[in-house]
Length: 108
Image 1 (cartoon, rainbow, N blue to C red):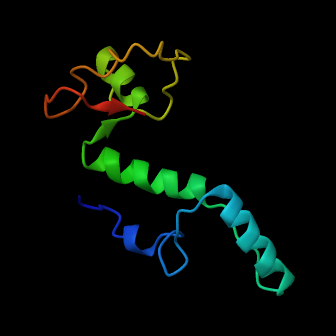
Image 2 (image 1 turned 60 degrees about the vertical axis):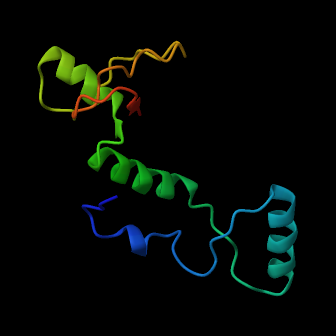
């Protein structure tokens, strides 16, 4: 996967403190570190999600729904796109939306 921003290896999630653990384990470790006077943990989930989404979109792994709506309308700008519709969960919304014509691209 290519990272057009050249920042993916420098994200807030990169480094020696990245670990996926059960919430209970995390809370115990966080509380123990707080009692030792160590700096508090920060939840960077939203920031990481935005970075991963940007990488996926730039590599055509997913298509942002706003881009699909605008492509269907013949508009090239995604800046003002928000049609207010939500997915019904049927899974048919993504068919044929990939720029390379492959089926199965997800929408964001």
